[in-house]
Amino acid sequence: MSSGDRGLSRALPAALLLAAAATSLWTVPALMRMGSSERASRSMDAAAGRLASGGVLEGFSAAMRDVAAAVEPAVVHVSVASEAKGRLGSRAFTQSGSGWIWDAAGHIVTNAHVVDGATALEVQLHDGSLHEATLVGLDPRTDVAVLRISADGLLPARRSNALPAQGDLVFAFGSPFEFRFSMSSGIVSGVGRSAGLAEVEYESFIQVDAAINPGNSGGPLTDIRGNVIGVNTAIATGRGSTVGAGQFAGIGLAIPMSIAENVVEQLIEHGSVARGFLGVSVMDARQMRLRGSRNPVLQAAASAFPGQGAIVTSVTPASPAADAGLEVGDVIVSIEGRRIEAGDEVLSEIGTKRPGSALSLEVVRPTEAAGAGGRRNVTATLGTLDPSVNARPFVAAFERAGLAGLADGERGGRRGVTVASSRGPVAGEVPAGSLIVALDGLRVASLDDLWVRLTRSAVGRVRIAFPPSARITVLRPDGAERDVDVPLVPR
Image (cartoon, rainbow, N blue to C red; front, top):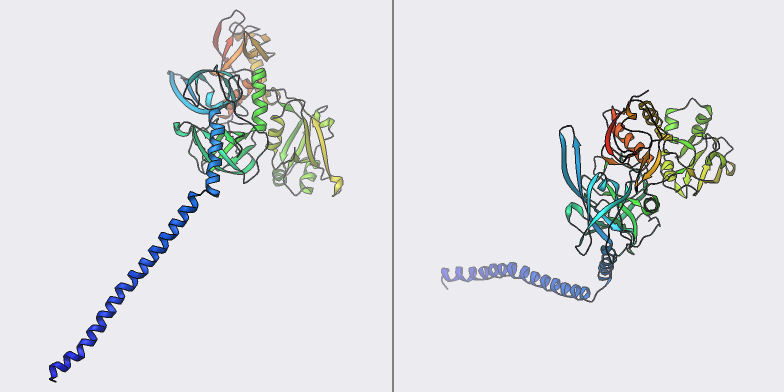
């Protein structure tokens, strides 16, 4: 064998080995990929088969469809025409929100901020039909309003006063960004929330992570059974909380049905809201410890009580609080089973109850010996809050302007504030017996409405200060209606 043949014989096995290795490097991964693909295919087919046969997700999806079917016929879209008045004239504009059917008589629940100042209202039902609406009444302090339409075959929403628990699944309905009759879902993040809203005095919100955006205001928040448990009202945007504006950032706020129902029923019955009165002033226990007090009783109570609650700083003589045995220095730690952590929560619990309601309070008297003797449960029967109590500066300013003896009144089906006594420069324009029906173009149906609107006008300025005047719309005894500027001179 020649040397060349011997070289070829040696090279051939090496080449074959290299070819085999190369083939192996290509075929083994290919075979592995084929095997993996076949396993994935079998897995997909098996999963699809299980999904096709139903299961937990199908049941969950079907349940949510049932919630939609149970709720949506009661949801409405609210269109609002308004007019903004200024020194340069007036400007017409429109806005919209949501609502829901309260009863077969045509009452519609929505937010006060949606319809306040409206010159025309229109409601669209779920079937697409449009109906002119009238304003029955609104309550600026709780941001609840009631409209009414004339229509047959209305389907009212089912309601529940039960307060949900953290973690409960909930659904929000409404018209976010004009996407009418939408539905979103989430869970209850917390209850009894206070967001510091300038537009709402009495706050005890349900906090949810269901998507709520502009346009959802006034729509229903429901539980898993389709019962309305709250009224969608506000959102937290990361730059504070707001009603009717901003974009959703994971925190939505709804008025609990226990508050909304009390307000709605009174607006339907009377056109205004009477509020409970306990007869106490309170302060956060934590703030009292930080700031201290010149009152030795309050200072001792704050020092002896280490937790959160509301310290009673004064008790009105012969009030429901006095009759129930409350004393200065007592710490209110719960009302109706709801834990109290701040003073404004006490005001909210009282102000959202009807006069005559029996209110159960858990009270700690830290100045007594620790133990059972320092903790007690008391029940107080609420009186009726005089709306002028918290508006003394404005009452005095109106009296200095010549208008006195203000009280709730009605004439010809219109509600407002009756002027019993009139003197001075305004007497010619606002004679005694006149009915104040609006302030700065916004409807006034009660004395409480008048004071809350004046208060917001003052707080809304750069500093908390009196506005220079109040433009009231009055219905005079002779039937004439006119706008009058009432000077407000602080004492």
